[in-house]
Image: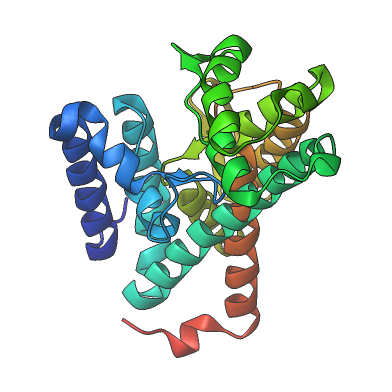
Length: 273
């Protein structure tokens, strides 16, 4: 096994520090509100979240499995690419994850928006409505959204009677999308795994829950296909139900394209340490 490489080591340290900060600072909420990736229509969104969410995790097991995968695949990839190309690959895959997941969310958001398009709700009022915290435990409840929405409608002199059941259903769906957040290095790591697959297509890999060796050139595309199916159907196979599946797909696609380009152009000849 290759020794732990410098960039992988530093990435693991940063992720662990951010996790400790999330756990200890501000009752576990402050770091999350600052650094998790929120939907841009949500008032909690900040531009730096596009990068900082890559170093945030939702729990210890989330952190552990991501860092274990980073160690297993990232060490081998960095050893072959060098540190500068590895960090470029890693961050690019993370940005690809954001792009794919946001694109997926924007599709759902503007599909729901069609149900209120004729109401001429101002952007300011709409952003406040979709930013309402209507959660109770793990659920977002319509009655909470309705109760908290009424004072906003009055504040903006918007007639509540215009919000019929169909319009409210659309607002509820938009709120669900806008209140979603994304954390984790999974998109980055999927890009690293895809790069590993391009470099070592015949390497045999196994999942913890499915200990059957499969060649990387089949294993990694298989995971991507399962993520796409999960995103479309809502059926989770090996990941928690709140996984950002399209982020996995985006990270893997960008990682594959970058690695494929470098391999095609003989990256070893131009290796940068």
